[in-house]
Length: 231
Image (cartoon, rainbow, N blue to C red):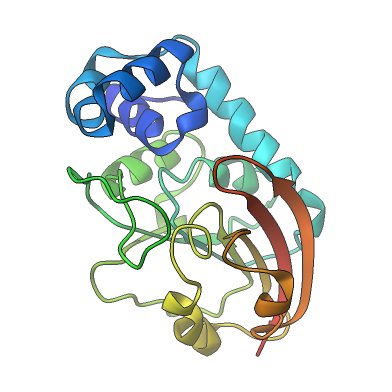
């Protein structure tokens, strides 16, 4: 079972609304996200959070596992959060791939709504590293990148993942130019888009091949895409 400490449990409940209990959702709605995020969250540590988290990310992986290549060297995740998904991806590959994990390193105190250039963040990159080290990854596999600083990726990208981040909370254009320098025709892209903002035809302007592999209807409708051949 995945190992979570007190800090990572709090961050998960801030990052993933689907892990909140009905009681927590009630308090967040009643008192507002600011009070909930900065004060009430300290008093909520949901029972069985480890099991719920494991099920959540395994289910995420199930939506695209069949699209992953048999061999892989370098994986980039834009908006990695605590990186829990990569615990399970790492178990799939014996060659111990490198993970370049991009995210902010801050817990916002102001609420940002909707789709924007400067998205809301609840993350501590040191916690990302601690979780991965405590759940099977080696130190040399982990490369953490703070997106508020210079983004430097030395290796060519074999697989890019961005779940509920690039294209979902902010434009994919934020990273397209960087990706063009580090990707080739074999690079696989798995990422989510906010369906009300992006349609498949718009995405096809950036990729040779685009396939919708998963859809989710909620407050923000989501399409999960499998893409290749960045134009």
